[in-house]
Length: 168
Image (cartoon, rainbow, N blue to C red; front, side, top):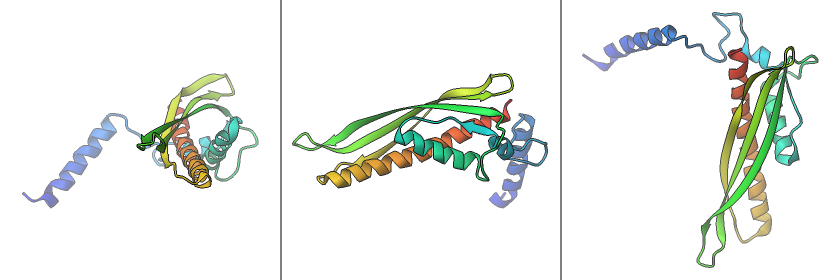
């Protein structure tokens, strides 16, 4: 039996198993009246401290509300960030050549109507950057790593918001 003949059978069995377990695609709009993207646009993101927090919040707003923020949001998202940097890859002179940058976010998605917490938890992201002899280049590398980590964290937070809204 050839692989071409087995694939349709395998796909049919897989789809049947997924529908039997209650699987629903997160961003699907057909099959039910729930629209994840429309509900994500009703989330108000609270101000996050520090520069990395600002970058994270801006990326999160762009992801949640690409067509603009709602005048009357139904949900609040509160995010607290903590950052840490650890030096890695030391030379013979005990100078670091690589740094790991870690951001951890504690979040809480709350429905305004009854103050019910729909989802809460922690997400984190890590990135690395090179430390070189030029101070300017090292500072630029660190800044770029922070911005990349903030955007990645915002995407993770947006996914958690979508899950929280979908499961209510």
